[in-house]
Image (cartoon, rainbow, N blue to C red; front, side, top):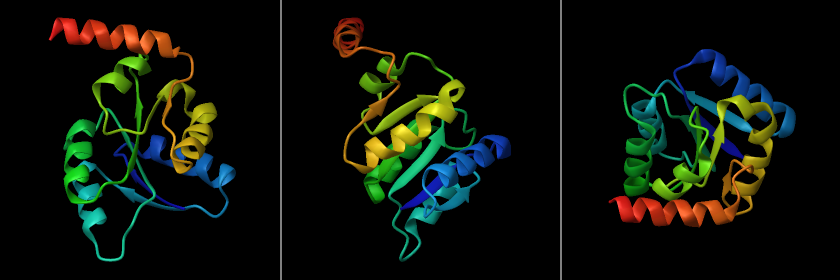
Length: 144
């Protein structure tokens, strides 16, 4: 499994790599300092990532812009790590992502999120019930 970590925060990047190495001993990771670097690395010949992990605090290219550009170039699984606790909101608003986990739950949620995404499923912070997702989608469509 090959995972690209697009994160400028070195501490967060190191934590992600450590968690992945413990959970998936054969994982191959590479770092991208920001979303733009991630796109460049995605374009390199022979590079095919199973997953790109990024955060919602990237100052150069936002996670949403990264997702949209990546989708145009070469669709890939994307996992967003963020500070926003309402994962259901993220799920309904940003469909390019296969998963969302909070920074506070990184240690516990990251292995489950990666596993689910690699099995073709989506993973969004598990404390939000599906019924709330549908209610939130309705509110967002009414507000638009």
